[in-house]
Length: 190
Image (cartoon, rainbow, N blue to C red; front, side, top):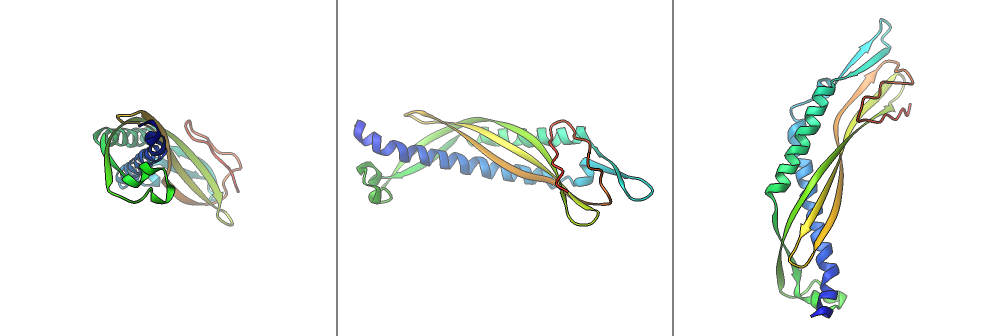
């Protein structure tokens, strides 16, 4: 029994990790898209210019940004909690230990449960787009820590995903320094 499990275990772990990756990525993308359909760049930022059209300040609506980050994380967490039970299938050829047979034979169904938590981090970047034009992009880095519970063991997997939540081309001269609101990091690449 031990020798059979030593052949199946790496395949089983990989299938569990792939299933967790697939579920977490799908949920993250869907929930972010659903929330972001409601908002645009102007919801999060206000650009103030002087009389010559030079950018003086980019104001962040921190309350709205924090609300959106919270909504996304809560929705992802709720969907993960709802999708606790999954099934994976291992081809019976995998028990032979012979790699070219691992995909053949009747499928063995195994049930897995998942639990996890979601961490988010906001990142902002400025990229030069030509003369007096700068692209401002804001990303949400989402890290989902998933515990895959099986009848044999618990497998831990961290799934990272980055989604674009806002972008805008800013026309006008932008100072070489800008306000870096809490929770973001700015990269002046102009």
